[in-house]
Amino acid sequence: MYNKATINQIADVVRKILDYREPPYDPVDAVNKLNGIIDNEVADVAIDALIERCKTNEKAFIIHLNKEKPFSRTRFSIAHELGHLFLHMGYRTPRWENTEECFKDSVYYRYAYTAEESEANEFAAAFLMPMEEFKKDVYANTNDEIVNFQKVAEKFEVSTENALNRARFSGITG
Ligand SMILES: [Zn+2]
Image (cartoon, rainbow, N blue to C red; front, side, top):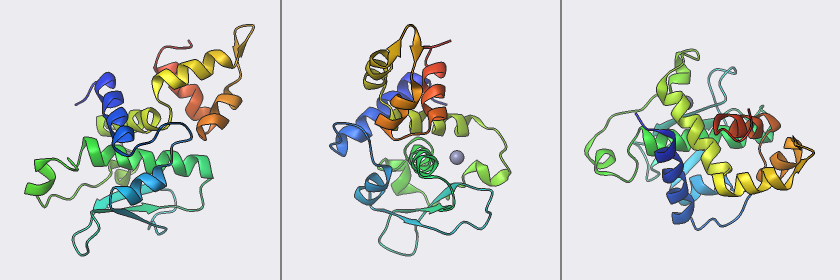
């Protein structure tokens, strides 16, 4: 289990390693740089994305993506899978090296809500919308105490819902 602050710190470190400096942050590029691959086949159309480690080729992991979903949602889904990679699969830690364990995204179990799912969502939000930059942008797009979340979402290339949730879950708005 991770607390939110830790997850945000891990996302900051990942962006730093990848030398990402300003939004929008590109999770597809991140997958490439981290030696992963994305394919566009998901067995279940209800699922946005899944991740598993690769055992058969030189790539480290594979993210299966449902391409039918909107672009902003796809970006969040890939970032969510990167959250599983770093938080739950131990990528680039001894755990990754020492085990053959295969992580299965719990979304597989028909949207069973688990701590891992909310942690991966927090990572995705933190990766795509770093808190300091996000706060600044929210304030810059506030007029008469009304936040234009559509504007904020455009800057970070996320859905308006993602931006709203980021603000709510981090206590910026009520
Ligand atoms: Zn998941």
